[in-house]
Image (tube, rainbow, N blue to C red; front, side, top):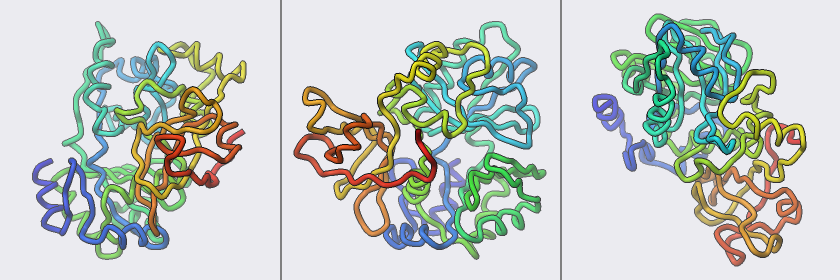
Amino acid sequence: MTAWIDFLASRGARLGDGHVRDFGDAAGELAAATHQTVLADLSHYGLIAFSGGEAQTFLHGQITNDLRGLKESAAVFAGYLSAKGRMLANFLVMRRQDDILVMLPASVREGVQKRLSMFILRAQVKVRDASGEWMRLGLAGPHAARLASEALGVALPDAALGMAQARQAFLLRLGEDRFDLFVTPEDAPALWQQLAVAARPVGTPVWDWLLIRAGIPAVLAATQDHFVPQMANMEILGGVSFNKGCYPGQEIVARSQYLGKVKRRLFLAHTDAPAQAGDELYAPQPADQACGLVANAAPAPGGGWDALVVALAPSVEAGEVRLRGRDGAPLRFLSLPYTVN
């Protein structure tokens, strides 16, 4: 990883807090993401690899989604819960040859890996940190599909979460014009330079903003054990199976779904004040407690911050939600790119 970070620095990356802050023009990079093709380093996401004859069965029994049909052609979105049914992590699950790979924020990777390892017991499963085995790049924008296909020499999958496999790399389609690319450390610099000819390099906050605008939350350290999956719209995003067998927290998730007891939901909002994961939200009602929590936040093009927030629906509908206090900066709510019942 050190060699990769050194390479990015040689290409103009400015580093901070373990990620690429920008390539010298943070505001310009954010503006570019609204209409140009952009290229981002995704080292702020880690990888856990599971291998062995029972790896798929083991992981299937631990997470919110069904892995029985997992193949190299498509990924699965899922969550990992505490016994209380609240998310300790959410992630993408992918197959690459003999490995099942879990991609999640690097800040929670070690803790989640250790916790999952505790339950392997006598199963034929080995788990390791694979973050250094595959460099992770994000490509998004109007020419992303063509550039990704040409760079990896593969035909692109049609559907979201579809995958394409190459000898030294693989690709995951996140949406119509958004892709994750995984490449060996040896080949990563050449791939970056090839893509950077036509795509603008951008810092980590730009990629975070793209995910926020897509309505896709990421559980971070500040929000672990706070959200039942439905609070984060995980079932709408295809991250929960209600037809699979038991997993930790499954009874609470099922009860919330079938009894309609989900009072909080994930919303997209904008505020003029800096926001970060874990910030509390307040409204006139309820008067005695916070009405929600910021799940993810990033600087927005044109100023201010965009955020995904989990909040009480009546408070949002009243339109008087404020950040970090009842006299804090107001939130203006925006439409998500999908429908929430």
